[in-house]
Length: 118
Length: 111
Image 1 (tube, chains in turn cyan, blue):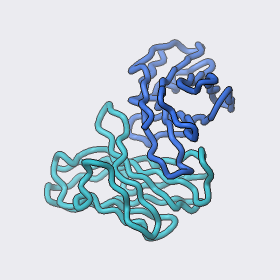
Image 2: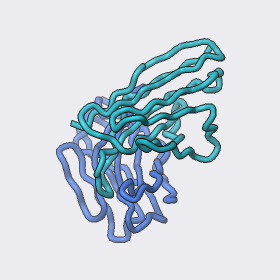
Image 3: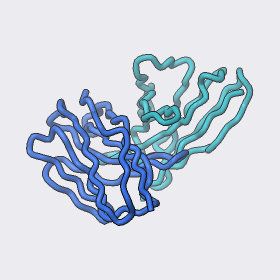
């Protein structure tokens, strides 16, 4: 149980393109989803927290107009990288937490999306 | 926020027990300690979670001293497939608090 699916797994596109990444909780409802970015050989850096039905909370230094997050349902959150540039190339990972989970319940991660901007 | 410190890398041999220690000096009362495993180009996989004392599951043990300022992930009899990056995570999602990842420990298991 507790499977999180990300799509696509790898995207290659030209500079200036907007790219949408989907994160789905397949067998549970997730009131909260998290979006991370990871550069090679570095740890995961939290970009934003996405709450179903409300605006996302962005971490300091993350441009909300650049990284649009939509959490329209309890099983789907999307991250759109708008007008992507080569410096946006990275590994983007989402995670989800079960609705009604108590403190300490772990989050479940997707397998990530590799974004390569040419 | 809890400041997380882990060794950058560790080497081991097949069949050995591996202990990876994570330091989290300013852990909050409600924070839990969670360990994840990550292979290249994959998302992190949950290994084990604890609050205090010792927790054991089918793949690992987690030792947490009384002051909770550190924790040790113990992997019994590692195999080559355990070569990965291991992350220590401290926080309390129940309170909506932000979670903090350590820098990760790159474990290399040699034959």
